[in-house]
Length: 224
Image (cartoon, rainbow, N blue to C red):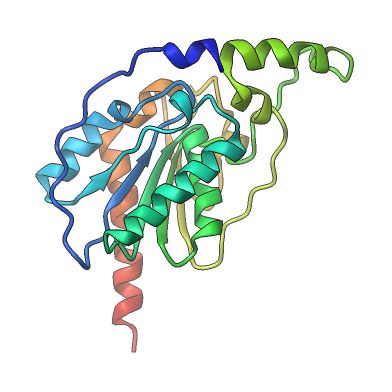
């Protein structure tokens, strides 16, 4: 149990338009210490356009281990399939982007596209004095205060794009939490002057990325 799991949620999502069979909803995945309300701005824009979305809470504000959060969100994905959802696009911030990538590998026919926002696709290795001696001593403290995810994510993680997935990485030159080297995967959209915690509020780049995904699959559907 992490102490920071008690961080209060930020923001409030608008109601989503009701899902109708055949639609491709958006699944928002918040980052560590985040909450669904972080996506209030782009969610409102989607609602105004009539596109349904889902934004689950998971992993005690995302502080649980990557393994536990992946398992929890995979079960959530299966529940969406039970509602009749056949395809969806994921928008994931920080660790939520990494989890979105893992879900895309696990559910390749369900996840059509993935938009990472400062996504920790490749982990966030620390070059601070966390050497082989100090790291085992510090890990229990970090785990207690911030959660297992902060231990998991400070490893260099392998990252690959599943075949057929349209992946777009939105990253910022002002992101001091997740470096561009970790978040750049697939196609990229570079922002300037946007802090890491502000990325889920960048409505226009998020909508642009989602539209690119939609256009790609529309073009493929039109091919003879």
